[in-house]
Image 1 (cartoon, one colour):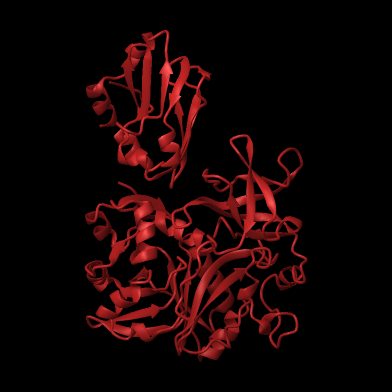
Image 2 (spheres, one colour):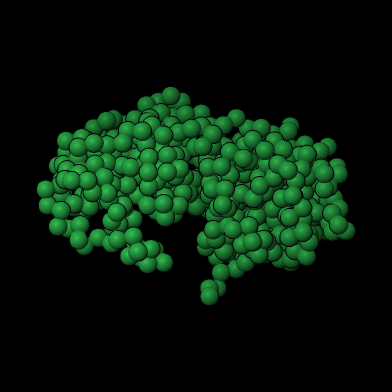
Length: 374
Length: 119
């Protein structure tokens, strides 16, 4: 009927009554019968299971972890070499202009680096890594595994019941643990602002594993709709919306992801694509900044809404890049870029909605406090 | 009860037409989080966009089904938009129009016609 790709969990989604939509070339569940609002709230209060098998899983191998890390640092402005075994970090691929080609997670798994990239970018990311790293480093896309996320305060207990040992993990730890004779690659991380895990599971046992999680009393299946509202309240960027090839890391308020050792005075300063352009934004020189935005009233302000300094007249000062209703906040929330002089917290600006300028306040991110197990 | 292709239901009592959205439309929209209603007393023309309705997923409009004057709006759904999902064809009506020319009503579907329309 279509040439959309499926995941090892597609049949399970359909049996649960999911509404399936095309997303990054895959047929994915946007919501289940519970509905986006209740799925969102359930994840914040109990635990939600997400299928994120469309994302790209890639293994990088070389002579040693150090060899892989040194090579990978040519592509990302992060401290890869200094990442301890069993730990994960957030990263960015940059281009020659300092723009962001994708955001990713990478983990030191002892003898190799495990990388997870966005679905829509994965082909380009794999090509980029192959071109830059081969033949010294092998770039191996993992195509026989599903990827699921279990998120929320009840995630720990639900997963521990099936996979003893996960409760001892801390935020951004990674571990290999057994389930039904299969190897799970687990990290304590996620994309909701809640505590939880991301789990790479061999496709042969993926449906059995997901069903076993859903049989736990506090776990519900959650679709892409609630994933978006959860990450928005969590202040987390969506690639292609809040960050893209035109946005640089410090503009995007992602400077925290660039460790000292890669900054201008660090031991391994620069050496990644666009380093000069990225560092030119240091010291408050970024011309614009990604900020949280809280629209007044109840009307959601979505991606594309144009921002102004005043209630009337004047040129635009920015644009909303993600926005909608925040079920936990109980009102509209958004993120966007504004010029540097309007980026301070509590600055009052305006968003144009159906021809009317509605007050918007620059607000602290995240909108809902993160609930990680540090 | 009559139905439009925009998934509105129209209930006629004398010269007053009460307008809401169908259960099918509410289900398609998903959780409704915001409703903006026209002002009481405003004169509207058929196909004017007079209501904004936003769900967690998207924004959409509701069109005036007939020429008329808005005589009453349902403020309860502005305060609690989720009522639109809970009881779309009952408590969660949107507005009432005072209509002088009811003839366009003949063009709208009856219940059987609407059921065929949504398949």
